[in-house]
Length: 429
Image 1 (cartoon, rainbow, N blue to C red):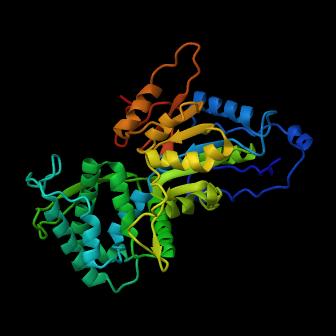
Image 2: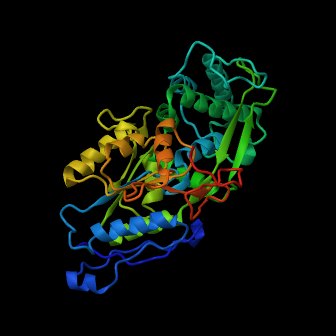
Image 3: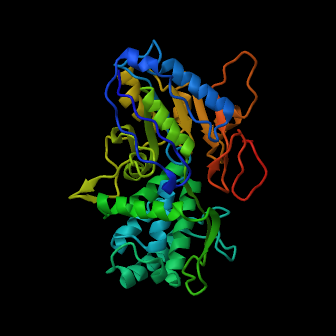
């Protein structure tokens, strides 16, 4: 019998989260059965979804007669836009741009960002502010020019550089706008997975300790900041070869008490929560294994993107025998580390990232999949639209929607969501 975890309460906001649970002594079956099975708090779950989750937990957890301690059930979850509202990789990217937290020499930086370059102009809507087409190689030249100017001026200072020091610098304003524009262009041309890898590699030349410290600072900044859409603009004084460009970015990061409570209840029932996300593993683990943030998972149950290291410094390359945890790579990780060893598929899947469609299709016998109702990739929209349909009479529902209010960063007890800037509840279409 697994150790029983002490209960705790989850509240919204970093300051309201209580300390992490501690493992209690292992108990015998009579002692365990004397207490009622722990249940999910109501919070802002969509009620039918909460009821279905609780029913599966009760049927398969260690309070049930069919529980097998040698092969416990497991639940697979995305991290970004699932266990949290927002994206830790995007948050770090924005923070690094705002505070110029880069250590690569300019030519190495050029090689990294130029990896997806094309000689022909970018397609619409990737034009400059005058409506003229943008050639990727010209954009890269402009970014490197901004980067070199900032490195010459601030490279000797400890990172992160104070925002006040940089906020009126034209090179910094142009650099962040062009980098955000470039990232969005890579995503449009080569897909979100390629754009994610492009973004992750920007931490090259930093140590793991450096990256974790930057991520912690980025998280604390964004958790306390307003949720907003912003427009980043190149100032007219830095037109560059491609001309001034602009980019729309979303600033959003919030804790999700419903998921924190779920992780706690799963563990109390002897069901292992597994995080598998396309974000850098160190960034996820900082959040997911922390009592401070209220999630407190085991690090060995957190799978994210990884980079090679050389003498303790991160390289802009991925380990050769570790799949990138997106699409088929995410599915491969779960098959190798869990399905093959435990001889069973995930009991549940919780999906909010753009890269989880392959996982949902691969584990078609998983009885419950919770999909966060948000704008996602075309491949994910197929599952979201199916989840939005009414359940067929007499057929158990497999796909559930969980709504959220992107204006507040909170879930809402409905399948519908309020998208950022909207007051009208909506379903996937």
